[in-house]
Image 1 (cartoon, rainbow, N blue to C red):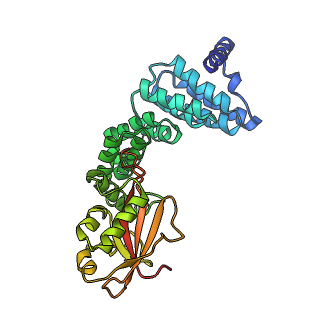
Image 2 (tube, helix red, strand yellow):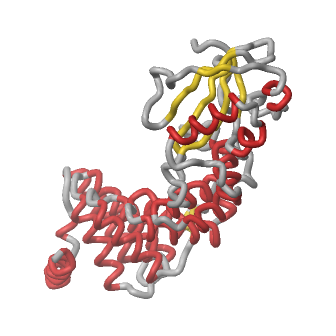
Length: 339
């Protein structure tokens, strides 16, 4: 529909044989536009000499409040001058000044598909189109190709680590877990990258990759079964069973004041030396603040300067492995009475 309307406008303009359709705005603006069209006519077929007057005409049309005529002006030029090497740039200006995301995407895609890249004032037209398409495109299967294109063609212009991070997120949306974790591993090679809104992104991704690479055989289907198994092991001082159900990856042991990603929260310690020298007791029920995603069991009597420990359980959020997604794991210990 849009293209039909555009062709009609182009036909009307060509029949008119002049630029009157574009002489708009205040009297001063109209005079400036006439002068620009005169310069454009004088430049003839010299594409490089036409860039500046074409830019200025487009800018004047926008300033005068005629964005539609600006778009018609540039798209008409592209249609009637198919060999102009700057056509990709003119379509970029059109796309940038559309108030329709759908039409803007159409022109950005057209630039990538049909026109060679060029640099205008040191900026790549294709790079600009790709970055805008990533902002506008909702379909993850399409975004993946844009991320890969940036990595293949413009690695020196982007934050490579950040690109791998968001590429991994997009693979996750598609359920492409092997590709997602391959991208996450590449992200970890760029420790200087900072992810807005996720200051612990590297630590979090490292933990997820480690979990992905592990056996994940310490989880149990139900919280009740896991807690019952640990209670029995504590009562019998069965260190082997206790260790078998302790998370092999990302297990923490810390005070309530610490953060899970504190550098001292995941220091390994000999659980057996505390269990076998103690007579540990445990609460009959889980703590009141336990919920569908995490739970706490109070234990006491440990041979330790802090004798009360809370065993922390959490539901496994790992759709990459449907067999354990939604299971429960013993993920850590909090030392001391709950705050």
